[in-house]
Image 1 (cartoon, rainbow, N blue to C red):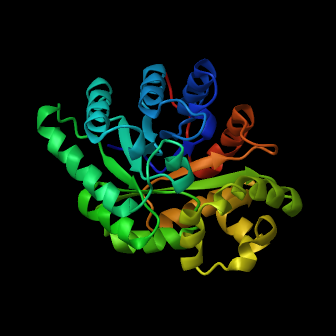
Image 2 (cartoon, one colour):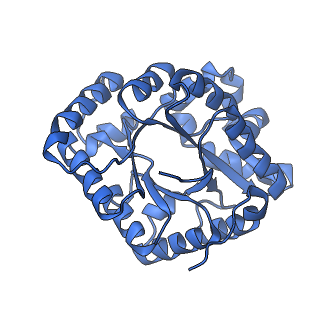
Image 3 (cartoon, rainbow, N blue to C red):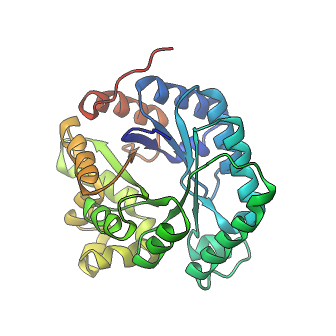
Length: 298
């Protein structure tokens, strides 16, 4: 699968009305970005269904789940869904699987308990189901931040999808994954040159994530402290997690991830007042030349 170096992750691709998400996907493909990522969370659509709808609306762009929650469907259903999409859209679907977060798991009636063990057992069950399914070569990647989950992504999957991470994490992840596994970090971006406005957008973006231990503990391992997490996040944390400035500055952050070992970077353009597909597309158009993204021909 050749997905180039830059794609798009955006929550509204799986929460906006389907018609709007499909129109946005077609525009993202036309601009020349090489992947689209759909998430699973409160209020989202079903990610495998949404992936199918976006794949059907487009012709060449890859679509990945970033991520499909393992607590939402059993392992056989996940494997069957992935292989069905792989069969219908050869070489265009990536399955990202994750353990999610304790509060989101609790509302589904599950015990978050030991997420690493849960993921290991789930992958084993997926593998047991595989002989009964078509074998289409769909890449299986894990949502992974810390070393043990990254090691599992190396040993039992095709790579890792990381979220809310600076390039320093990408370098650490690559060292654990080794040279032959996919590494696809998400990178939040905002085209804003005024520091105060850019950091306000970054803090609004970070607010929920700074309440989730998975993210905070990972950031602690990268050297951030309680002071960085207080009052909505320090300038240092905002600048590390959200690339802002002019298109050249944002493209520089993408290059930092690629230089640190990423295979592909999924951009999440932030709106000034929350997720906004129109604002995201405006930023993606402006960023394309500096990212080396070229419009596709019909």
